[in-house]
Image (tube, rainbow, N blue to C red; front, side):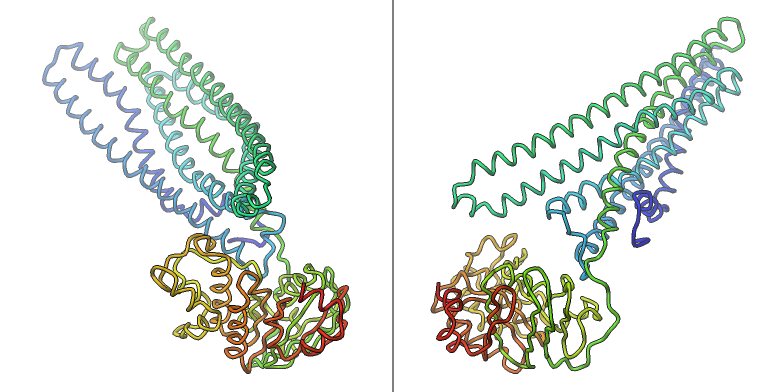
Length: 564
């Protein structure tokens, strides 16, 4: 969507541009509706002058028929105009959500940095909705201006003085309304920031609910959320007060303009410059003006909130990518040779490591944080501070992350499941037409399916919470195995399963991954026992590499890591 670093104004402009057809149609129909509304007082004045004053029944019936036709047109134009506006707003909101999700899920990352998932969800829902609503506000604003213009033209025909009151008073009113919307814009942005933070904290607490209960941290969590929610409430109240003040002041100014029209019209009727019917029309038009002017006040408020939300959306879209795209390509077919040369990242210090094609390698770190750093480097979530990571002789810096992930899958320890069925989760990233049964058998999911009411077709709730921890791990591992990548990196895939099940999974991984490169970053002796060799990382450096049994014999730190 647009430039790589869009501003809030760019977001608004492209939102409107994308829906200009519906906005144009809605504005045309809305303008016709407002013009018809302005005609009603005029027609009533004509009825008074030509039918009521002269007691002409035939003329009265004719003009009542004209009024009926006008009202029919008003109903149809309002219906289809409102439909076009709502459609433009909903479509713009949808397009923004898709654009935001695409940016958040971009292989090169960056959008999630410094933001909790709940905050991003708030931007993609509430902020997108407010920006989409600007299309409806724009249509309503154009229609309201058309109604005011029609009113001014009619009043000018009756009296130049009346017309000038409207023509000169309306721009002043709009300018004052714009000034009054400035505090609302800043407070609306603060309101959305606080609401997003409260949503993020709530999502974070719900995700860790079981852990909180287990450690007795409910009171601390409640206190934390109460503080966050109170801050959000205060920001919402400030925004509400700003909106109420803006609406009240605009309404007061609108009342002054209407009173001026009625006063001038009354004086003109008193000295005979306009007829009784024209006075009735003038008063009716003055009352009609209340509607368009209230709409303009609402439009000002919507634009203020839309600008604030557009700025927040622009911040996400303009977030710098974590890694560069890279222009290299992998040789085909991918052999799966992985090399780390002098890699330093986080806790890793000058790590040198060669993984042969088809090797099943175990990696043990004495510091869990270093395991995470290794996963980040292999997945190219971030590039090393120094050194290189290569796949088949090609530096990962030279590869686009999307291309890299077609050859190397890095499955993290806390991988989530998705709503759907067990089968859907396993086949989420599998090649088209691939049989998921071998992966399910290797990961022990076939055993899980037997205990579920509908087998592999059993529904899985959000993040897999309807399954136990061990069941979730096995389904996530089966998903990684079913993807059938030339290189697979897995981090602690069996921490929640029993020893017997783990032994079966270890054998299954070795069998299904035979001939393809597999790296198991784990401290599980059951998994490490089936590897070809194990690399021990101590203090961020490779201290030894040997088969699992040999490392058990000669390294106390290794024994402490895998047998504790």
